Length: 319
Image (cartoon, rainbow, N blue to C red):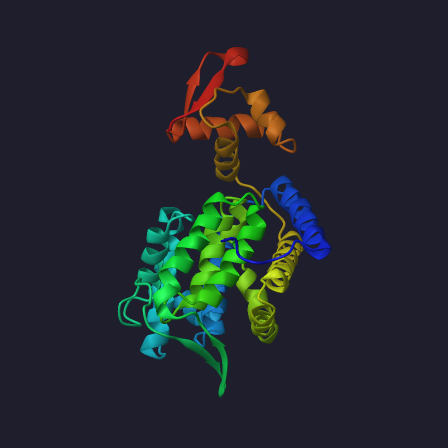
């Protein structure tokens, strides 16, 4: 069964805005940010997603753990961060449409933090915030069928990937397929899904905005539960993405190095041969001397092969 939700005017407006910003991100070469920006945003993502779940570590402490430095903090919190670092480093290995891959990610994320990580629950579970029971998840005997239906929706439905990723995120919170770790898995897997839509989503720290609006995040989840539809949640998460992209565009000026340009152009040209003029058309703000220097360095580094001479020179990436 297709999860229940409606496509509202607000959802359409947000998708149009996000699509426009993705175009600007691509034009500014922010779809694959610099190594330093990726690192900073990855740290923000990990710290924010875990803080939402009660982890006490700061950005500085998460950074220290990433750098293999000693941190004085509760061992459980340190282990949560180490597991999250491992799972985010392995995003390439996860198939967004695979339940097996989903469970593998959970096993890494929750290793040493619970019994049987990566195993779909068969028992009952509820969510308590403060002293109140805010959600009773579906009984254990129907969870496997619900989660399989959800992955079928992800694989087969024709809705836009942006919408499907939000629906998936909500449904993971609703179904609660594991005894613990469902919140961080919902946010993680939305990133895994949206990497297919644009590489920028791998390093977009949307979790930081969710953290600042955590009460609203939980309120929207509860309202969606009451309505039996993820419509409100889709609107909320799309708004988060729209704001995150706006922040990325406003705060980051890209100064590309020669290696950055070569990496970007490889993604564009693939296995096709090209000449210096075609390389310069892609990077209109560089001189012919800079283009020649980029290409010579790439040849010297064994990234490109060079054929011909002078005006007939062509290049091809070594795969």
